[in-house]
Image (cartoon, rainbow, N blue to C red; front, top):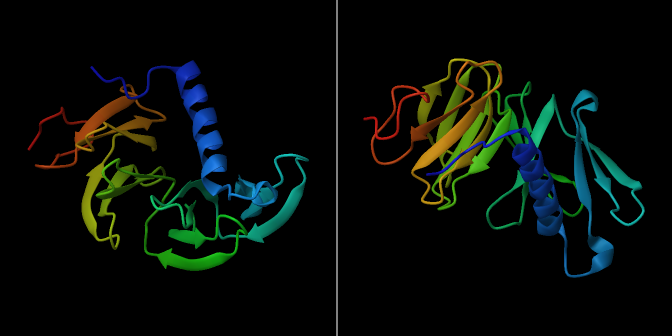
Length: 193
């Protein structure tokens, strides 16, 4: 049995490991090019940090309310989710330079690729929904209403179920089947159609 969000300590540990994995992902072969990227939501920017000195080496204006970031599956780009700007910003993970903007992604508070790289999913915190896209081309596939403020997403290893955490819900986690079939809502039980 899979536990999507097992508890506060494991969630904090998972976040730490994710941050370390992100730092490792954006590292190049040359140690001098290694950077850690930090989101400054209140400042609408990202900072590049030298992990050896902890000094900010660059600050890049990124857009309205960036909340989460993640590398693309191939590691070539870093996606920044601008929740209030309703867009994803594609950046160079080594320099922070903006490569392009992808508008029309409503309230992308948190984002994730499925392990099989077929799905790209965003949690719309203020819109109370999960949006599912085909990962290749970001074609919208499903919009799943959530009872209250979906904040984070995780997948089963086979990419068939996405689990979400809701900030203000009596049912803090629930699964949703991505393929095959469809869900009436993200709180529907596994196997819904």
